[in-house]
Length: 225
Image (cartoon, rainbow, N blue to C red; front, side, top):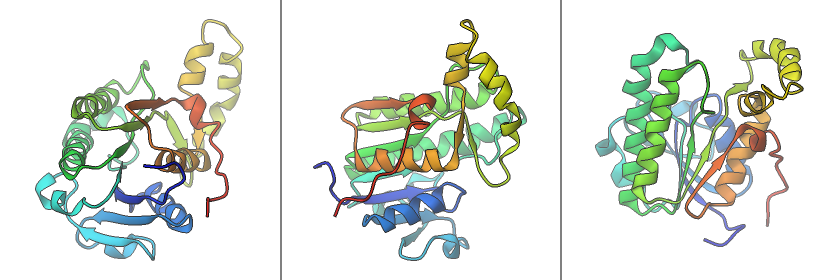
């Protein structure tokens, strides 16, 4: 797949707060995008995106429609994760992740983009365990993959962590906490969007991990003509 080529992208989780922005940007940059949505959510998908109805937790409901996509972007997950949602992580995040990987592999997808989570961390262990389990499924599949590992993505209704910035500033200046502060840093919605677009347009060979520090450096460049 030549660098700079227009992609045929299959997106799950395209009606979420990151998914809609990603689809709009990919379309604006000339890529073809198809989104898998549950019945009743078709109108939530940005105009210009092809819509497929199915259940992202059940491979059989969408696997036959993944081809001819060359790129699969997996964004399905429990909204606003917290430690109390342990069972939901396994019921939604793990099932959707595994179903997506298996469907992509069966369809001959060339590149899989997965949003995981920064790790290790002293909190959210159940969430990290599930995301790490999907990462392992992805590695075992043999697919080329880009795994992005944000910690917390700020955006509309998600700005309270900005209050922690002085704390992060201090941690980054203490040798014993500097690495943790960088690994578990805050990511803006624009940075996450840029990192996702870069992942789609620059497919990995093998498995590439994108940590917080690299997500924070992500900047969108003009689309290639």
